[in-house]
Length: 306
Image 1 (tube, rainbow, N blue to C red):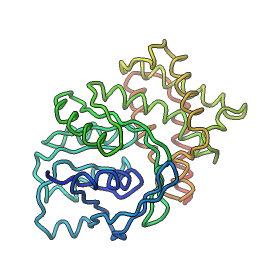
Image 2: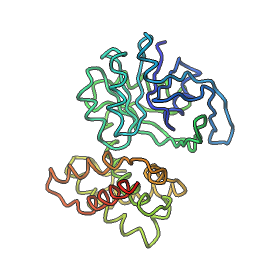
Image 3: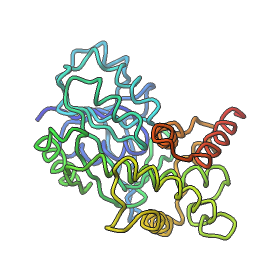
Image 4: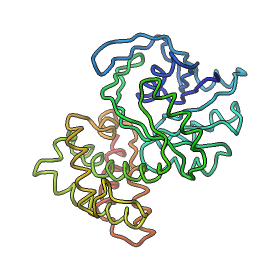
């Protein structure tokens, strides 16, 4: 079976590598060399040590490797296109890509630019890094896979079966655009607020923060309607979106959102991928976006400060 390449050795990239390696040949590709011996801590607290095939993009360019079955791009959204460019000369243009980014920035751009199939994945698997040689699988979830033009259902099904065999349950779907926008709506209501206030997700339920959540959801719900994205769980309008956000906040109460992790580590955040598409859509549909713009401006100022 042709190998799977994973571009970006962050938390999801390493979780994928650990999970897929027992089934298929797997290569984890990063900008710098990492230890080949890697440790996965399972949700049950068990530790599994595996030797993973680790290469830098520069090493890969100097070899003539077998073409991969899939290239999983697991970098942050703002780095996805540059990461793909670093590999473009060593993979056939027909190679299927799998995009694991948050937001809705990289997915349409790469889907339009890449000649081969482009699948998009949205996942609720939880993972975080513990240094250069460790990743914690913090919570089991589910992954949905599809493509924006709904032309590669068979390929999505093949990948979903492989991931499920690798103990990362996955389902191929025909409505991945809807699911990506839904996740974007939830991320927009949670990530910027926890990043700016330095709190875990559950604290958004307090009186100090819950009005801000509601004001974000009010703008987001109108944008979703204009984009033709159905309210979640068969509900109606703004209340359905708010119910979903509160549900996610409750189920991830102890989580430290990725944007907060980025701010604490003084890294660039994914504000452009999460808030950017919503602001652009609001401008296009002539809808209010003052709350979203204020969040984007505040996070930009935080980033400029470091």
